[in-house]
Each structure stands twice: as C-alpha cells, then as structure tokens.
Length: 322
Ligand code: DP6
Picture 1: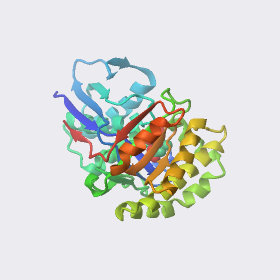
Picture 2: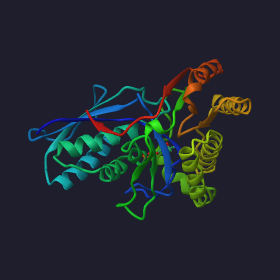
Picture 3: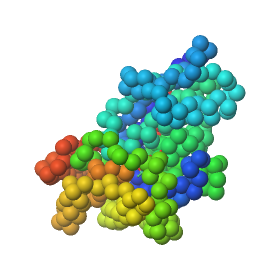
Picture 4: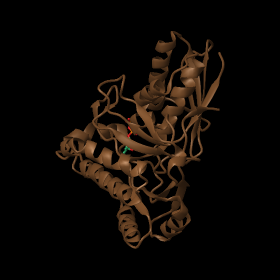
C-alpha cells in the first residue's frame, strides 16, 4: 500500500493539561489552551505492508522497540480497526528539534502519526476525528491537529473530547522564546505525572477553577490583551507546578535557573517589555512575547546565567500531509 507522510508542530500550553479523569482514553481533568510552534515539526511516513511480520518504528534513523513501539502500535491498532485492515506498518519519523529541549515531542509525534496512519489506511478523517485519534496517543497531541491558537475541550466523553482552533496563526503575532536551562531528558515523563496529579490536595482546587482561567486566557487571546495574557499564563503554570510539587511522590521540575528567569521576566514586564513565562513538565522556560520584541527577549535571555540556548518559534498552522 502507499506511503503517506504528514507533519505537525509541537505546541505550548497556556492553560495546562495535568491529570486525567480517564487515563486509558486520555480524557483530561480540565480543558486546555495552546499555540502551535511554527518552524518546529515532526514529519512521519507510514505505510501498511503485507510482508511485515510486525510494526516497525524508526525515529531519527534509529529503530525503536519497547514502550515507544507499543504506544505507536496502540494508535495503529485503532486505525486498523477503523479501516478494517490487518496489515502491519512501517513508521518512519523525524524531528527537526532536539529531544528533551523543553518541547513536548509527543504532541507533534502523535498528531503527525494520526494523520499519516489514517490516510495510509485509506481513511478520510475530519479534524475532530483526527484530534480524537491523536489524543489517544498523547493528550497534548490533540491540540497539534488544528491550526494556530487551539482549545482542547474536556467534552463529556471520548466523542466530544477534541481540540478546535479558536484563532488562526495570523490573528496575533506572538513568539515563544524557549530558554534552555537543561537539555537532558526529564526524570518523570508526563504520562507518569498525570497519574500522580490527584495525589495532591491542590489538584481539586486547580480543576474546580479551570473554567475561570480558560475564559480569561481565551478572551486575552481573542482581544490581543497581552497584559491579561501574561498574567494568566504565569498563574496557570504556577498552579500546575504547585500541584506537581505537592504530589506524592513530589515532582520538582524547576531548577535554580528556572526561577531566576521568572524573576527576570516579571521585572522586564514591570519595566514595559511585553513578556510572560510558562513551564511544562521540565526545567526550561517558555518566554512568550509580542513578536516585535522577540530579538530583544532572545538577547536578554542569552545573557542570563544558566541559559545554554534559546529556541524561537512563532504561531504554527495545522497538521498537514506533505
Ligand atoms: C505539562 O500530553 O505529554 O505539557 O497524554 O501522557 O502524553 P500524555 O501527556 P502530555 O502532557 C502534557 C503536559 C504538559 C501540559 C500541557 O501540554 O498541557
């Protein structure tokens, strides 16, 4: 059968997904909002082949077995069931950004896989169906299917738990300057972390308050209100990390350089530079700014102690076949 190649951007969450109400289906405890990261992508080619005795996964030129392959085969199984086929697949995937760089590679990877595998199996899924399929591989991948600024709705169950675009990339010129303070792989991955979320007594309060934060963030994006945007993304990120730090066992992703950047960013904003920070399950800091200030922000970040590199990305589009 024919090989289909698709590519997807990673995304950065402004209102975070942390904790599931159903771990198997990856139904999140709260909705989330993100932006796709332009210029960074995973490109994945899938072909179903009668001659293959099992699924084969090659990432950046290296054959992958074990857990990584199991997670990919799980998505391929869903596709095979939908398409009514019984063939094994060859999956070849490449990232143009470094692994462990503070950018969730699983989001781009499972969005690209959902699109390439479904097409290669002869399916024509719409955006909602693709988002739902990508979600089963990695929750945040559901948000890398639609374009630009994206909201992943909690939904009531599997069917309506999908991500939709709330504004196209050209709506607002924002840039993510990712300050790399630690390029090594994180100790506890998101999947294990989600399971711990509900061991923190703060998770219930965080979840109960999510609609308020989603409304503020969505409105800030729609109204291009940077001050409101910066305040809510920092607040939401700090809340998620409070849950992480108070889980059992506790998860502490920040390093001293991470906190140094928080102080710097808040000081820069107070003195008139439009910047705000957000941090995922790692130590690196995503410093959001209006794009016209990106050069200045990048320069300042590079001067901070403990910052080894800065990656720069604007607002990206939808996952697509290439
Ligand atoms: C902190 O989507 O990576 O980046 O569903 O287990 O693959 P899995 O988790 P994942 O979790 C992302 C967590 C986060 C916040 C976010 O992106 O919303």
